[in-house]
Image (cartoon, rainbow, N blue to C red; front, side, top):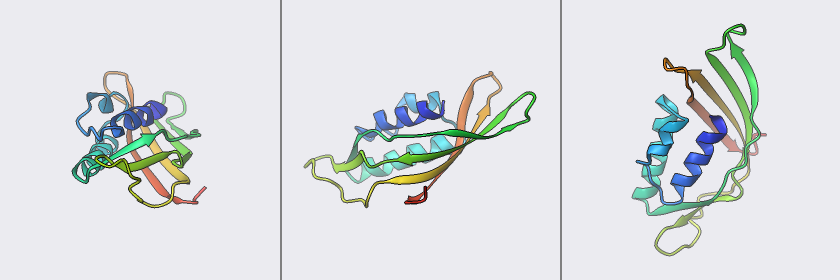
Length: 128
């Protein structure tokens, strides 16, 4: 579900589709809100994103250990090849350097038994 969230986000970012129903497959709550708001901002500003992020997630904690309902993930994501462009001209948006960033995420088990990312935080380039 964590990597699925990033794949869904990358696919929607190609057209800045903040309303893509695929976004809710692997994300909910604050995570889904952050993704949708970011894509809406890109849409509003005439930006699209090409490429894909690279992720290296690891489980940091499982709670409770005997019957998990929450999994905390740490990642060193790399967005060097996931770049924003002006949708109309195709020129790079010059939104700052890409690179390796420390990411934390929380994945929780829903009432229906599915697992979804409920929150995540991304740090600055060079934090991992």
